[in-house]
Amino acid sequence: MKRYLPVIAAGGLAGLLLLPVQGEAPQGVEEVAPIGDILIEVDARVEELEKLLESEETYDDQKEGKVRQAFGVLAVMGQAVAEHPEGGEASFSGPALREAALGFKRDATYDEAQAAYAAVKEAYEGGGDTEAAVDHEWSKLINMHPMMEEINARNARLLSVFRRPRGKPEEPVHATTIALLALAMDADTHEVKDENEIPAWHEMSKEYRELMIQVAAKVREKDGKGARELFDAANETCDRCHEKFRDAE
Image 1 (cartoon, rainbow, N blue to C red):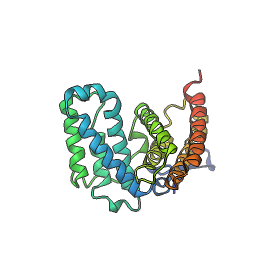
Image 2 (image 1 turned 90 degrees about the horizontal axis):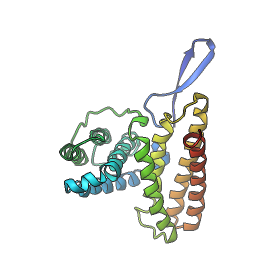
Image 3 (image 1 turned 135 degrees about the vertical axis):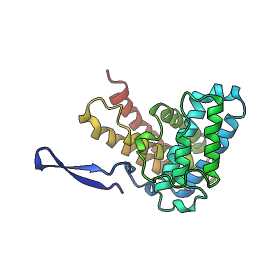
Image 4 (image 1 turned 60 degrees about the horizontal axis):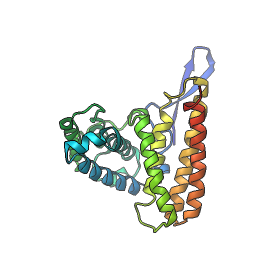
């Protein structure tokens, strides 16, 4: 769970504040996703990136979309492995994967993107910067725009799962990936223009995350109807958040 450090404010002891430990996830990753889901997601994104980088033409077409999203998701998954109590089940270092994925830059040329992917593949195969620190700011793992685009893509896939859940291991992964992305969302408050509204941002992020965790649980039970109801509730929370922080003049 989230730990806090006491900080004495300028007003003295009466102004005692509690601030979250720097770099730690807003919630224990083990409460958000089982390690198996995280590893399935890593496998899928590494495979996807290989295909997206097969040609310069494909890369140029997808660099602002799927390529950027996949690197961002891998950075989040790497950090999730780093903090997960069962992260030792991975055949790779979570921090090494995170650092490799963060090596991709939005303006990367095709050659630079291939180099970033080569670093990801090396980390995925057990190499890379295996001495990289476990701690890392969750707000610095993925930018908000690719995060939201990734969530939209996962929403579409989940709708298909809800219609006929078959109990396949990969089916709940879309929901748990969204829930892990929501940890990064929670930590990244740059969209909040009034600092007095930061608690509301955290509360909505937490509500959304917890609903997506429940969606994953219902999918595992092959309860498509129950999963859809929770999914709709999660998206209502998402809409309220957009109205408050994105759409407000």
